[in-house]
Image (cartoon, rainbow, N blue to C red):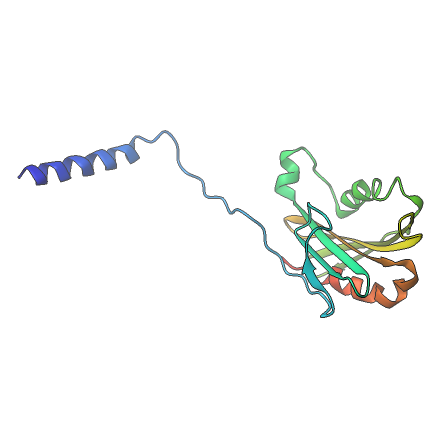
Length: 175
C-alpha cells in the first residue's frame, strides 16, 4: 500500500511539472549538410582554412580548395541580409586577396541551374613565397537557405589544365 501511494505521488509530481511549465519547447535542427563532387585525384584534407566545412587537395598536382558556407538565418542574426547573390558576392570579393601583389579579379559570370544560383570569377595574384602567380576560381552558390563560397586554386601556369575541374566542383554543390 505504501509503495502504491509513493508511485502515485511521484507520477503526479512528474505530470504536474509538465503542466506548469512556463513555456513550450521549440525544436531546432543543428548542423548543416550538403553534397559536393570532387575529381578522383583530389582527397579531403585539413589545415587550409579553419572556417572551411570541407577542404580538398592533391599535393602532387599542387591543386587545392575549400568550401565555406553561411546560412541565411545565421547571417540575418548578425544583420547581414543580402538581397541577392550579387550582393553577397560583392561583399566577399571586395576583400578577397585585396592586399596581394598584382591582384586581378575578372568580371563575374552568373548562371542559374534549377533552384541554385551561381557566380564565378577568376582571380590571381603574385605570391612572393612561390615566386609566381596563383590562380583561383572563385565561386559563390545561393540556395534557398544558404550561401556557399567555393575556392579552388593552382599555379597560374596550370590554370587551363584544372579550371574545368574547378567549375565541376563549384556546380556540383547540392543541399
